[in-house]
Length: 406
Image 1 (tube, one colour):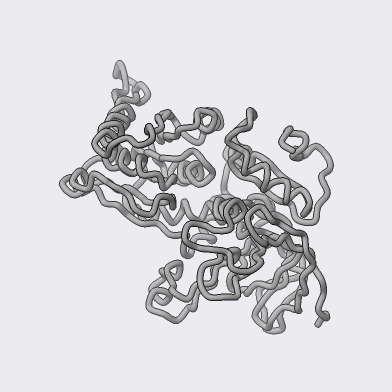
Image 2 (cartoon, rainbow, N blue to C red):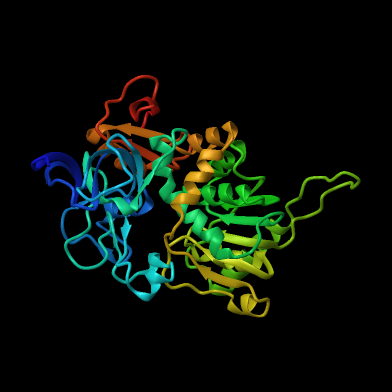
């Protein structure tokens, strides 16, 4: 067994206070792997911690290594580990449940009250440190082998993709032939569109307030149509808000389906079968309720405004179910299979979703700054930022400076 070693890590000490530090790393425990981290995707929660030192009510109370969308290479095995070899490429599922409570034994371990989730400041101290470090020890049970066709970048994308897989499962409505509406053309929203299309959805519409994101989604084939939403004026009354969101739902319903053989036009899409609300914004959830057909589902994927005013009668009297979605459970196997079987066109689309890459810890710090000012940039939208840990920027990869964002 190798002795303790020192690894570089990117550590958050407070709002906008990221420091490159050296941390001591022990050999892996008997049931764990030591993984050299290669790619880490930046999540919205990472950016909230960086910008504010908190994510909603969850406050960073001690130095925290960020990052939880990760893939890497196995470099050392615990003494009792079987089924893995040094050199295996793996994606890390970073939430560790107790595995013994009723929720865990019923397959809903994502809701385990004892869950420890990397890079989250939730729960008792010490925080469970994240993956933006050169190497990490992680239980083998929660490491997933990647086939040759799935590279490290796609391996890191499995974590947010798992949220989309879990959301479609929770919908519990056949998506084949369905009309799907998505609020939020960010990474998770577009991954929901991707998974819906893999399940055979007939028509997918995404709505957002950012026209550049809508253009990206349509140009890259994630969706079939888009709807630009208007921001609510500040201090607008509840009644005016609900009128505006009902009008937005009507506009979405007037979008046209494609022409069909033997028919002059495909007609309006009308109310949709399932809506994935990926913003957490009150106005989007209001619109989602109005836009979903009787007996349909609104999936609450985004985490935003914690207390909202909703047209609840419009949901109750039409049996529109509001269904919570929190992280994921038992999704990595399906996600890996989906990626393994993808055609080249969809692989290119997913790679387009990874809009920026940074290389090494120094550029990772710059990546957080760049993400913070993303809405004010004049280039393509910022969707998914990847950090290639321990690598120098080289070749024809687009670095931050090449994109004019540093």
